[in-house]
Length: 413
Image (cartoon, rainbow, N blue to C red; front, side, top):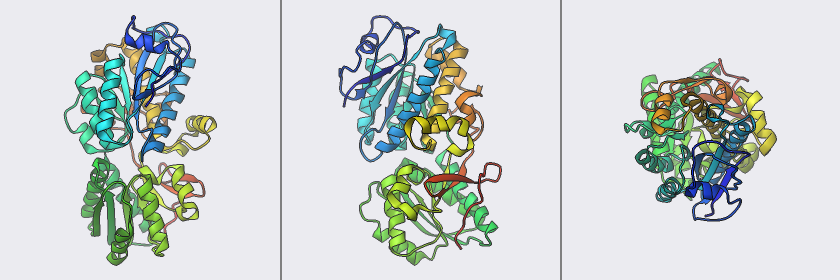
C-alpha cells in the first residue's frame, strides 16, 4: 500500500509545518503504508481524505468513486478553490481501504492521525463504511458516504453524512417499482424470491424488500441469505427454480451478481431479475454477461442519464458512463465545498453545524435525484429518491418512476 497525495495548483487554507504540509510537498514519494497520491504543495491546502476499496473484491467500485472525487476536486480547484478561504485548494489524500473492514479501520486511523483532514469520503461497501465511521466519529471529522446500510445513520453519530436513501428504503422501492412495472405489462405479482448477501448492505435492503412485500400482500416464496464471495450459486438457483417465483430480487456486489444471472441463464430461468444496485449497475456487469444482461432491472439511488450536462464530463475523462456511486460522491464533494464557503473556516464544529439542516443546491447536487442535498439531524440526505434502471445494450436507462423515466420499461411475462 502506497501513499499518494493529489494536490492541484496553489493552495490556501490552514496549515503550518506539520506532517501534512511536509507530505504535500513530496510529489510522488512513497512515504507510508496504506495511502497513495501525487502532490506538489504551493502554500496551504485543505486536506480531504478518500478511503476506498482500491484492491480486493470491491476494487472497481472504489476506482469509480475515486475517479468522481478527483474529477470534482479538479473542477473546484481549477475554478479558483474555496473563495471564502482565500482561494484555498483541495488536497486529496487517497487511501486503499482494501475490501476488509478491519483493514479499512486501520487505514482510516492512519490517515486521520498522520494528516490534518477536514473531511473524508468512503467507502462504498457498507461494512467498510461502518468500520471507518467509528474512526472518523472519534476524531470529529465529517465522513460523507453513499453506502446504504440503515445502521450508518441509526447510531446517533454526529459526523456521518449519508447522501443516499437507506437500504431499507431502496429495498422497498425495488419492489414497489417492480409492482408498478409488472402491472403496466398486465401481470400481478403474487410470489417473489429474495436472495441477498448477508452483509450490512444486503440485510438492510432485504429488510426493505420484506416490508414492501408485506404491505403489498405478496408472498415471499424464497428468502435466502448467502455469504459475500460465494463460489457456487447452484444451490441458490435450484431453490429459485423450485420456488415458482414470478420475479427475483437479488442484492449483491459484482462477482455475486454475475454468478447469479449467469446461473439463471444456464438453467434457462428467464423470470424478471430486479437487482439491488451495487453489482447490477456498473459497466462490468454488462461486460461480464454480454447479451445476458439485456433488460435486467435494478433499483438505483442515482443515475447518469438524469443529468447528462454533468455526467458526460465523467464519461469524457474516464471513458465510461458515470455510475451511481460516482454521481453521489461528486455531489458530496460539491456539498463540502459549499459548506466551507458558508463557514469561511475549516473549524470542524462549524462545518458540522452547517452540514446538518442546510439545503445544498446548485453544482453537482443538481445531478442527484432530489435535485439538491439536505441532511437531517442523523446525517441522512432526506431528498434522495430511488429510481429503477434497465440495461439496454451497453447503457443503463431510467425507466421508473414516470417523473424520471427516459424510456418505457421492458417486462418479461
